[in-house]
Each structure stands twice: as C-alpha cells, then as structure tokens.
Length: 271
Image: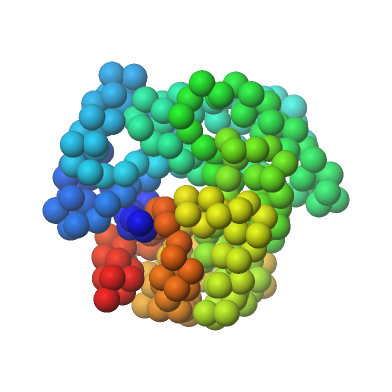
C-alpha cells in the first residue's frame, strides 16, 4: 500500500499536531511527517498522546530531524552535536510512533567525495549504535544542492554499509534539481526505483519513504520548493512509475500548498 501525506501540519489546520492529524483524516490523507527541523521540543507525555491519537485516526507518522545536522563538519563539536540531535530525534520519534526519521546528512566542504562519505558513515554508525532499542529507521535524504552530500548512489551505499537501521529517503524533486533538470521522465523514475531495488532488495521499494514537490533550481541545484503545477517536475509520470512498479510505503508532499498537492497525487495514483 502507498500512503500519501504532508510534511508537517496541513495549511488548513490549526497549528498543532492533533489538529493536523484530524485535518488529514478529514481530507482522506493517511500520513504526516513531524517536522522537528528547528529542534525536538515535544515532551515524552505529549509524544505518547500523539502516538495514541495518530493510531486512533489511522494516520501514519514519520519525522524529520533538525536541519542543524552536519555529520561531515570540519568542527568536531558540530559532528558530536549532530549525533546527539539524531539520538534525541530517534527517542521522541519512537515514543510518537514515527518509525521513519528523515536526515539531511551534511555538506562536502570542498572535500574529496569519498572522504566525505567515510566521515558521514563513521558518524552515522555511532548514532545507529545508540538507537538500537528504538523502533526507528534513519532515512538519509537525497539532497538538491550540489554542495550537499546526498546523491542517490551515496544514500544507497550508506544503507548497504550500515544495515537495516539506515535506509534512504528518496526526494525525487531534489534529484531533479541536483541534476539540473534531468531525472524527470517515466523511464528515469523507473530507473531510480530499479536502482533502489537492486541495491537494497525488494524491501527498498516495498518499504519506501518518498519526498516530492515542485522545485526551482539553478546551475547549483535546488533553490526552493514550488507547487507541482507551477514547476517543470513531471509528477504525472512520477506517479505512473510508482503505480507500475507496485511501490509501497509513504509519499510525503513538501509543496508549499501541502495538502492540495498531496490530495492531487493521491487522486492521480488511485484514478
């Protein structure tokens, strides 16, 4: 089954998680990503309430770790702080019942890409060792800027190297921006998904976490997100590829209009 939802509380809901869950249920969407992007500020008590409430309303939760994570920082203290942020996000996500945690891994800092890869793998491995008791998966996101670590190959290799607690978050809009307008045809979407399955096995596409939106980009990659109909992202063929390859998991919409594009994608998928 493929579930559709929003990155954060829908625009049409009051700005609290419980109202967001109720609005998603009303809109017949099925998922929400908890946005901890500016820090994890939910108490254990509220996290448990969110878990109970989301289960009652059949809304599947995931989460997004803070933006301040950089596992390839040139400053050791920032790497240490990043690992602590991942662990804290994992703890609260576990209590919330949000199994998938999306992570922006870091930047290259003009470093050799293999060196950057090894630094990020080493730091992420330490985080993984600390979260074994939590029912969570760290989803390393494909990133949209050329200065950011996070090509498709890099995130799939991390998943292979670090085991079942690390999987990719495939952001199709980011991949489109990262390649300056490529990766935007039915054949290319299918190839991305085939690569995921080839590297990670059937679970790669039967338990997938996807981000999607419209996107504006330059020769340096991503600039900012757009609504799907205002962008050149080929969302119709994107949905067709998910359908034809029988992909299962979560599709989280990050367009500025959030629920409008999420509903449009869900209706396209089912029609």
